[in-house]
Structures are given as C-alpha cells and as structure tokens.
Length: 282
Ligand SMILES: C[S@@+](CC[C@H](N)C(=O)[O-])C[C@H]1O[C@@H](n2cnc3c(N)ncnc32)[C@H](O)[C@@H]1O
Image (cartoon, rainbow, N blue to C red; front, side):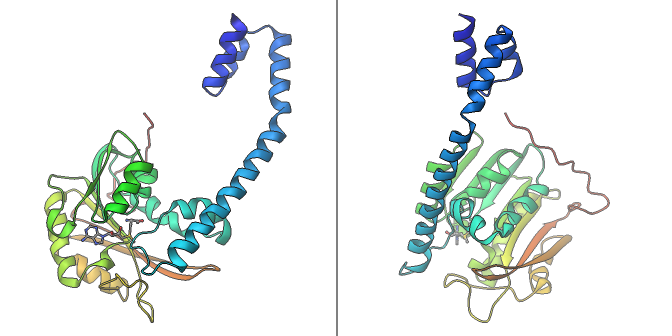
C-alpha cells in the first residue's frame, strides 16, 4: 500500500524526499538507484526530441519567412524558443519581455496591444499581472494565441486598436514591436487613447526597431530614426520618458532596437521608483 502510494506520488508530481522517506531504507535506496539508472536514456530521448523540434521550427521559419508571398505581420516566437536562439546564440528576442515585465505592477491590470501570437503575454507578463487583455487585429494571430497560451488571467481579443481599443483603466500598457506599424498620425491617436487608460500612475512600455536603408517589413508605416525621434513622439502625452537602445549582430541579421518607458509616474531605475520585482505562481 505504502509502495503503491509512493509510486503514484512520484508519477503524478516531482518526487520529494518526504514521499520516499516513508519507505523502508533498502527500498528507498533501490528506487533511487533504479530511477537514476534511467537518467542517460531520459537525456538521450530529450536530445533527440530537441533535435526534432529544432529542425521542425527551422522548417517553419523557412516556410513563413523565406517563401511566403507576403511575410507575416507577426513572428511566431516558438521559432525563437526552439530554433533561432540555439542557432544564433542571440538572446535578443527575450529583451522586450524582460524590460516590459520589469515595469509591470505586481498584480496589476495589463493591456497588451498588437500582441501577435501571444507569446510574451503568456511567457513574460501573465505571472506579474492579475489580468491581461491582449489584442491584435489579425484573427490568425489571436487564434494561435488562444490555442497555444491558456491562462485564467489572460484574454485574447481580435480588434483594431485604432478603432476598438479595449476600454477600462490599466496599470500597464505594452506596445511591443508594433508602433512602427502605424502612421505618425495614428501613433499620436493611439498614444492619446493609451494615456486615457493609464491615468497618472500607469506605465507604457514597448519596443521598436531603428530604420534601416530599406524598410524592415512591408507593413511598417513609420520607422523611427533614432532615440530622439521616438522620444519626440512620446513626449506630448507623458511627463517621464525613457528610451534606451540595444544593438545585436548574429548570423541572421544586424539589429538596432529602441525600448521605451513612458508615464507621468516614476519609471524603472529612477531614484523614486519603488516597485519591487516579485513573481508568484498560482
Ligand atoms: C511584429 S508584430 C508584434 C507582436 C508582438 N507584440 C510581439 O512583440 O511579438 C506586430 C503586430 O501588430 C498587429 N497590428 C498591426 N496593426 C494593428 C492594429 N491596427 N490593431 C491591432 N493590431 C495591429 C499585427 O497584426 C501584428 O501581430
């Protein structure tokens, strides 16, 4: 009975010492040894599975980004997770999630604008927030997000943020890799709507790419020229602005990124910024 209960406990959840400690010592030692004996096989299986998913996601990248008649407007970041990061050794894709989460109020309400496939809403923001509404106007993106990223506090909606931005008040608005998909006039309108939802204390975070010799994507409407250019457009609506940049070079591309925080309240790393970084899993 004790052995059965322990075996069930070990199978259903990660075994801890208490599970095994209930057993007689000789049995406990033999179970430990037997499980340990499997380790090389488990590692070999996982190496094979990683190779499989590496090539599977390489293939998806080729299909979506090298052969598509029109490149998709959003990137499926499971390609980063399973292939591109291993291939390039470049952690750049995760920067936006880390910088965004850092500015997020613990237990706050978050609006993720132009969320694409929902990867960052789920993997980077959903443990920080009590509620996230994530919006994109591409039904394929929100379908992908709904199918792949389920969490009780995460809601994906299909809407054009120019005309159908969700109403309500929010502690954080995220606008990652998307401000460049709008004209200057549209950016000004969207920023005004964001400010209404953030009030005096909320923080807008986001990221964009610096203009290259050629447009980085055919759906880009306005590519920012510099930190100053981006700060110029944010300043009208917010008292505090921080724009900072990163540059990366890897076998696939050269990248110059601009990250931004905007609010009337204190921003991350300012002396009066009181937020403690704390993440809890329910
Ligand atoms: C490059 S993706 C960024 C996705 C995601 N935020 C990320 O960081 O991976 C840009 C997204 O903006 C969305 N988008 C562009 N214009 C939009 C609009 N007017 N309303 C809602 N979504 C829009 C596109 O469908 C696309 O998913």
